Image (cartoon, rainbow, N blue to C red; front, side, top):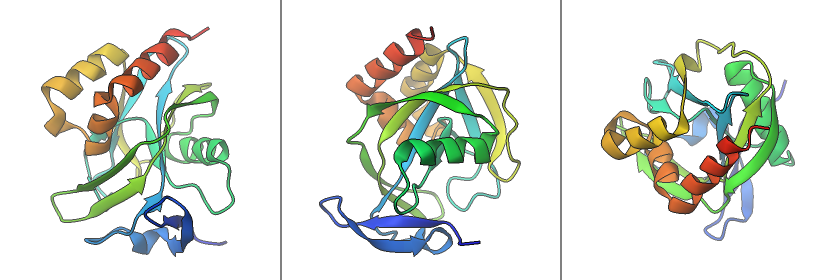
Length: 183
């Protein structure tokens, strides 16, 4: 089995190689490609997850549903479906882009850096959640407006990438539109 890797990027966002995922996140993490996904259930509730306490970066922090790294040559939708299945046991459908140009750099309390071009997506859960304990320590299905309110009132309790994504007016509006179109 080939180990998971990340796609390294140059400053213009072009692929510049790959590196083992296990070695890429440290105090001077290179720019790399990722994704962030906000998963809604059939009732229009958002899945908020708490990162496992064993995670290298931001352990125990509440965040949006799922994040990950596409593998070299892997379509973004396939990467999102793979990671949703792996972290939460969820099969997802209707994957839509909500903030394609999101890029951020953040440092956690241990000094670990995230440095990503990280397009943001929304998706619809098709089954019950069955999270992996080494990825997700807790979860809640919540109304999007309640989550957006928490971003405003208690950003310190949430992952920095989630706060930045939800604070972007166009992204928040796109999430509202997605959530409302539950069919």
